[in-house]
Amino acid sequence: NAGVTQTPKFQVLKTGQSMTLQCAQDMNHEYMSWYRQDPGMGLRLIHYSVGAGITDQGEVPNGYNVSRSTTEDFPLRLLSAAPSQTSVYFCASSPRGGAGDTQYFGPGTRLTVL
Amino acid sequence: AQSVTQPDIHITVSEGASLELRCNYSYGATPYLFWYVQSPGQGLQLLLKYFSGDTLVQGIKGFEAEFKRSQSSFNLRKPSVHWSDAAEYFCAVGFTGTASKLTFGTGTRLQVTL
Image (cartoon, rainbow over all chains, first blue to last red):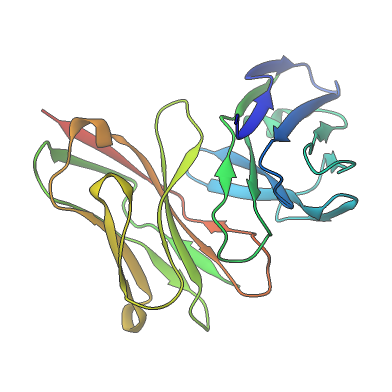
């Protein structure tokens, strides 16, 4: 049981490049989400999904795209990377998406945009 | 809008000393309350959570937290800190009807001196 996995662990991009951050969970969780972590700002929600085929925006969705074709996978796409997207990105999942559910976090992807 | 405040950015304690990390929230009703810990280079791990019942909750690694409705607070405590507790601690809140979307505080970095 691997839990929540994220790839890559580190990535450097040039401004304007696109890429996909991968996230997968093997716990059969319905809810998955993406956060970004910036110094002094805690974690902020980018996008979330309450089940396969259903996604919605969080607090800071601009510049990011998501899809959820399977229960297990929830990739995050950067359409045209900008230096402001330099951050650490965390994927998380929870069993049913209830407000009191425990969220399980992946190890993170550290992204630098030059 | 709901918010979470962790007023202490950085705290240093000696090993064996007691610890209290502060967390205040702003919301009209009782939220779901969480404390997560992030060790360097790692994802977030749940320490404990509260949403009803006994206002003193026990978590992993010897941590506890007390919900005080009158003060809108959910402070984290540990009677005797170990060097391995050095990490960043995040308070988070969830709200009924918002699925598992969490609002995080900005975090408190704990340093433990030997």
